[in-house]
Image 1 (cartoon, rainbow, N blue to C red):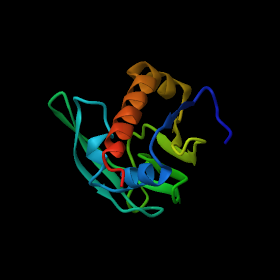
Image 2: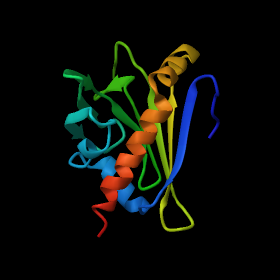
Image 3: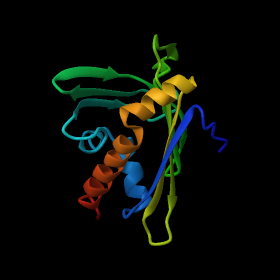
Length: 156
């Protein structure tokens, strides 16, 4: 993947959970609230229509404020790649103030875990810098840790 260092932020970590389970967590609305935002913030609602053009809508509670984040899936490669954006909502309706496109890539690690890569693509260098200043690396790192811990509890 061709990354632009001015507009793309990337985070990679190896998780000690099989890729199939990581995929399940990212694509099932019942799992999203358990890891998707850094604690103590919460996901209070999640609605997924897992298809290209389908919705990926979440509602967060951040410090007592409810925040709606609606988007769509742009690309789905089962157990390998998930691309979603807030630039559009379902029905390809443009969002008034899009923030980013997220690209999640999964591959098997040598030890049976998952190489987990998250990329946040932004429309401008300024937006990417703002996301970095908001704590992109710490935030996505916390989410990866929460995901790994949660998924370990689901191991079948």
